Amino acid sequence: MRRCSFVQFFVLVALLSGCAAPPAPQPTPAPTATPQTRPTVAAVAPSVTSAPRPTGAATVVPELPSPTPEPRDPIFDPRRISYAHNFALDEIQAYLDERGSVLATVRFQVGDRSMSFAHVLTGISSLYSINPALLLALLELHGGLVTNGQPSADALGFAMGYRADNGNRRGLNSQVRWAARELRYAVRDYDAAVRAIAPLPPLRFADGSSQEVSSEMAFSRYVLGRILAPTTSPGNLGPRMDQLVSTYTRLFHDPRDPPGDWPAPAEPFLTSPMDQPARITSFFDHNTPFLRVNGSIDTFWGRSETDVAFAYDGHTGWDYAMAPPERVIAAAPGKVIFAGNSDDGCATPARAVIIDHGNGYRSLYWHLYRISVEPGQQIERGAEVGIAGESGCAIGAHLHLQIQYLGRDVDPYGWCSPNPDPWATSPAGQISVWLWSDMPSPCGSPPPGTIVVDDGGPGFLSSGDWAPNEVGYGGGSRSAGGNFAGSSARPWLAALPVAPAVAIWQPELPAAGEYRVIAYIPYALNGFDESEEMRYLIRHEDGETLVTIDAEALRNWWADLGTYRFDPAHSPLVSLSTLAGDNRRGIWVDAVAFVALP
Image 1 (cartoon, rainbow, N blue to C red):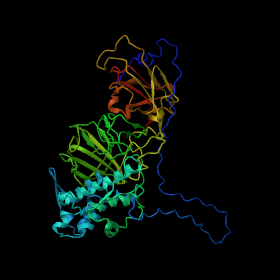
Image 2: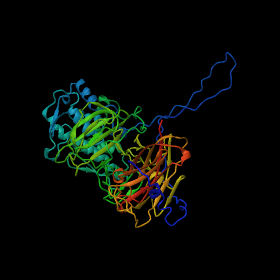
Image 3: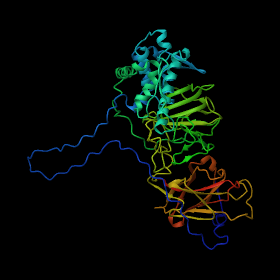
Image 4: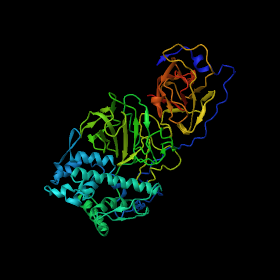
């Protein structure tokens, strides 16, 4: 950033060019976003008061109503299909060691790495959102592999009981991967059937027969039926399912019991997984985050986009345009439960890292060029986990960031629409809440000590032709094309082809002091590429400062404009105009926040 002594040119050039006073502010459309709500974790007991009692009177303790217990699933609690709390790499290895399982000593060669069975199981169960205990129960059901230290070659070769495909799935690694993917496909197909996107595929049995099923079938019954049917006959499917439940109960606990100790959705705790902002190339798709194309992308704004260039249809996370030698860093402290090669079915394995944050959430970092951590390692926020790359299924170098809550993929940007989140309401889905602790949510209430001036709200003034957009802080924003063909590296032109559009934010600050100034940059289709040289002018107690930002790299995020001392008596303001350094690229106007510093 650098000092500027021409505030009249930058801020008031449009206001004084042919007009005596700025026009009245034009509000953006009424906000459609609402603050995000979190599910109630526990009922609060009603308070009880009583009149004073005479000395010696018997104390009567009122009986409070007991909370209504959750209903018990008749087959398998659906949440347990995807997750087992505190059961990953080290816990799985210790569990297998204690039982003298053959799986405790098995190793797989995945690409250029030799990896333990527990390591591979943690990676594949996390990638496909499948409870690793369920996969172990299937291995025990079909071959006794969890409790047997010396199984037969046949038990190992067909560990999941799948003998179709002319025996081409023979081998422990191949069998486990088949089972994890088949369970994932069953979850995906059930989700599609409930949304009426596609009919529910039939159950196919070991003898080649099939059985049509209705989308009214319970979620767990269908998912477990899909994995068991190819290993048995139609008449034996019911007993086989009962045996699986009994096996899971013997190894772990009764899977029909609802989980009572799993963490509630977290308050914001993540920070950026990169040292410098990188351009976003794909969103999380709230419609069908199963890497399945269905013609639309539902962003966290609650909008369905049909432009295929906008993002990756069916995407399970967020993609950032990063490449070697850019560092990928931990978004929060935690334990590395996977750091190795993931066999995703591509020409080469993907180098990946998974961190368990101990609060029900995991962060997954995919397509790395190099891994910088070890399995089982405890790491701090901001520690390097690897170098961004294009390993595995990546087309072009980038970071794929995936966040999971209780084993299921979620959007760390939450959900910003009053309409129901299609992913949260799906039987296969999960609630998404804003998880970024270093920036406020664009669709929630500002945190304490933060004063927000939104476009069209109190303290905002504008002149010129700003086009409204439905995406942005509080449910809307404005944009216009830049009209200055200069550059920050070249002299300013004396004559302007058109009077620029100007926006001014004037905060009502509660007291003099230091404030961090941040500006929200939306990401929406407005006919322009974002300006790489958007210029903000900040008037503060010590003068005026001009800050240039790259909106293309910062879109869908907050631009940090610096920390300044403001005095409410000296008319603090932030201004922006269409005098950008790159002609005809998009200039965004949205909220500017003033964060009070201690």
